[in-house]
Length: 132
Image (tube, rainbow, N blue to C red; front, side):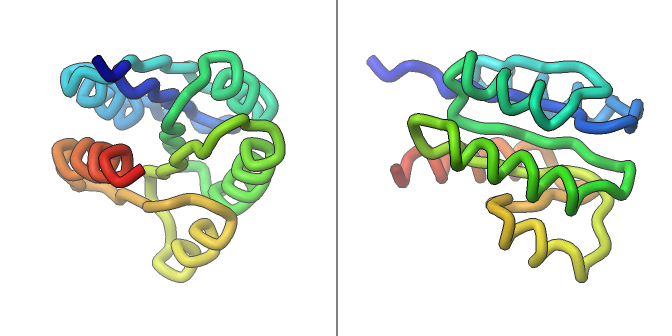
């Protein structure tokens, strides 16, 4: 029997708007995934440590503060350098369209903007997992 996917949902930086993060955390949980929600005001180091300690398969970053490029680069690099396995990194929030390719270059697999159905995000994560 396969273990359920372990998903960390995190809010990096000083962005305190966490409604979207809580909604996606619940959607992942309702889809049968184990979810660790870190809460707001997390540093890159705190998020990376949680991903590693929890042996997470997926990291969902929720960023509305405009610091998406900084956090994508810092967190994706730390996970690549320290994780014992591949970790899928997805991001939700409001990003300028010109920044989406930049965060993907850092290692973010996909960006989900406002209004994206939670079922679309869950299906994306499941498809990634099934393809491994």
